[in-house]
Image (cartoon, rainbow, N blue to C red):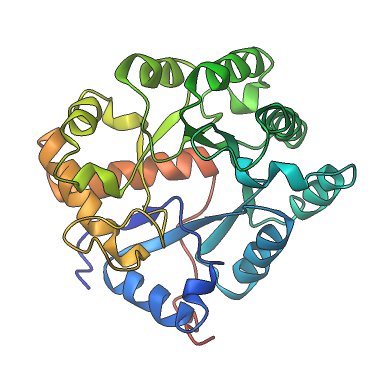
Length: 278
């Protein structure tokens, strides 16, 4: 590991995924060797949110977002919000997420998705926590929800209400999120050969509103595409961003990590005695 390099923060990685059950400790060790020293693990439902909180108690470098992914909105019931509220009491929970709308797969009815999304936006206001937003083919409805929600933000959230995860919106809508105070998550697709439009959009963004993520085990960047994604590959995304923004890799690392700290209010200092064994 190059100790002179500013640390990177992986602001979205699903380390609770069964794909990491056999080598989770080694995955974290490799990431640390590549300079990644902070991880946000989002929940997809109650079970994964609980598991993420449990992981965060074992690994000081892991922080958590608790929430229901739109795919799982159909499983939301009367007690879910209270259970998320209780999980959010952990000092390692720094956001509500992964929440939002997905009109591509439609694994939950759209009306239910919108209802559950709104419930969790309300919870974020109540807990004064930022949100991690999922969007796929749903930008109009998503913007409608966010615009009304943003009007109710407390002072504590106005400058950093959340992140648009693995951004795929067009430039106009991306700027609308930035104007609402959001950060923009840049992930592996920025490295794909056919992603010229995404690269052009990303290069137009203010760097002070960009954070990096892997979405591991998904969205593996080139040249690792086809393999399981993991946080150590965040450096590949950082390198692509350095090229797009025409700045040094150190600048990308330092700026995006500071942006993540501003959003999630986490402290990058932690014990170096971390045990990576499962």
